[in-house]
Length: 116
Image 1 (cartoon, rainbow, N blue to C red):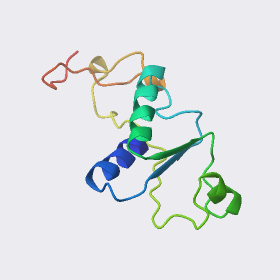
Image 2 (image 1 turned 90 degrees about the horizontal axis):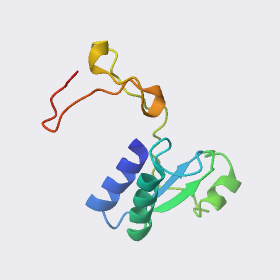
Image 3 (image 1 turned 30 degrees about the horizontal axis):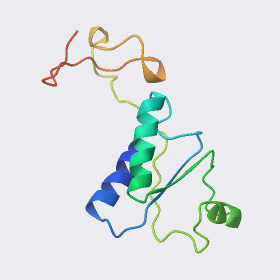
Image 4 (image 1 turned 180 degrees about the vertical axis):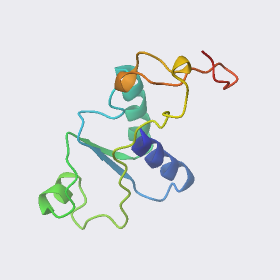
């Protein structure tokens, strides 16, 4: 998720920067619903962010750079991998039993207050 957020924020605040996002998964936003991924992908396409999925990052491979349409490589790379929720400090009664990644999401209300 953080890569998508990062790419769209860069595009929004720096519209002259060309942005490309890759993921080893078959689409953006991994475990989220298809409708969320489709919406996000449509937005990124509309604003000119290039997307490449089922694509493993391999900066040493010329084939990789050709595949993502950057034959001269990127000027700058930001790598966002291995991000996970840090909720270990929260009491179990405020965490979900189910959800993306097997659960453990913090319950909260519309005022962003933690709830049981």
